Image (cartoon, rainbow over all chains, first blue to last red; front, side, top):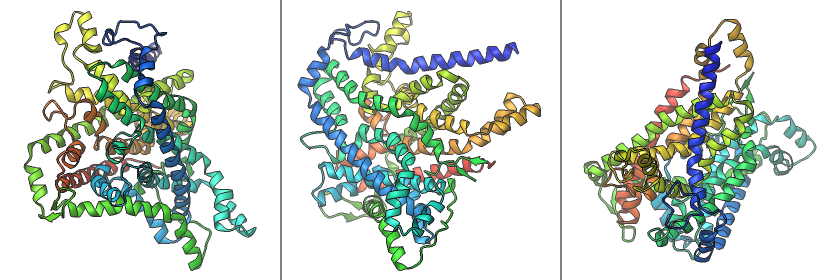
Length: 275
Length: 313
């Protein structure tokens, strides 16, 4: 019994050490936002946490508020359209008795393995041809097109855990199919919607290559592009404000994660079906 | 008994069952089409059409402005003769395999460890997931200072009197790949942990109780209960992990730009550079096709390997 206990303690100890190691980059990240440029590289240097100089200079020199506005707008509309469109599609793909509709599942599943880099150039051409390149709606459309494939499959699976009897009684009561969806199915699929939002918002918030290619020369850039551009003009001189910008860009997502992490874990098992 | 299904991914993961409510007639069919139409249209325009387009462009010489000139398989031959292509392919594979073995292995071990930690589980889970919430660009800025010649690692080494081990971690041919792999694992382990924890939670405890009565030890329990029942989670994590590491772009692009030399170049970066720096669209698209085939083959192999080991309770 003693060796089992020792083993358990050893496992715990290793886990805590690893957790500590995982946190180190965050601690450095946080402290660096307060360091002046002479001490930035010194990891054993404790900066004055009341010195907000880097933050002040960052707010003065970057277009932070416009960028975060743009990023929030992109995330909001992307997720809104993904949830609305793919819940509709997923519902039908999972419920329909018609083969052509059900086969879309396989079509979408195959589509997932197409790397974005492969379609990059033709998509760019579509953007140029429609004059939508370097506009926010184009990036949102691309995100919705890519994200709703994945989300539709998720909804198509989730719908299996909702009893069909609910729909049947709605039909008997004279509810149309669209009405049934809006009033009964969509609210019941809320956990799936929550999972989609809480797992994928980070992709859109943090995406770099999307704006790099399709939203590069616009006046206002997304947060990630702002960091990238700010780095280009600033890094050889001074990293402090760059760190501050990274921190204020990451903070909304860190907070979002802390408040929604329970959904994330539940969402992954909530779709379990009796089998 | 509850069977956990990750509905989200692959037809292989999930059996399609037809619904029971019958809606006959052409009108109902049209309604069903209306439900799927927006998503399907977007998919056809922005995923399938570009896919078909790139099959054609890959066989052309094309700068993106003038008319594409059909040249057959020349782009592919040229690609296969290029040394940097093979280096990029090798690097991409290394990223994928180390992510697969070390990353997923670590996720699994940590999930098993966290599964027993009780109250502290939530805190630890949060810490391990946190890097996944931060963008690649932020990660690369933080880690640049860690790996820098005057950065954190070297300072620690020097203060321990091990200054001779100090190195320019990202500027060195031998250390640049491991250095990037560390960041990728740091950023990706959390997702695996969450999925594995969800999987572990769904294993019925009666199975362990029965095994206990039969006198099974911890190793036997892991081998005959935990591991087989966790296989759907393993399929999911490896599939998602592979498809993202095979396309790795952001991290090496920002941190090393493929350097030193081609030492950290990846397929996705070659494609990007050929397309948007040199305007060799046809050539870049051929690279895209190779990447697609590569991802498809590896994903299928992985699916076959893990799916065949899944069991149903």
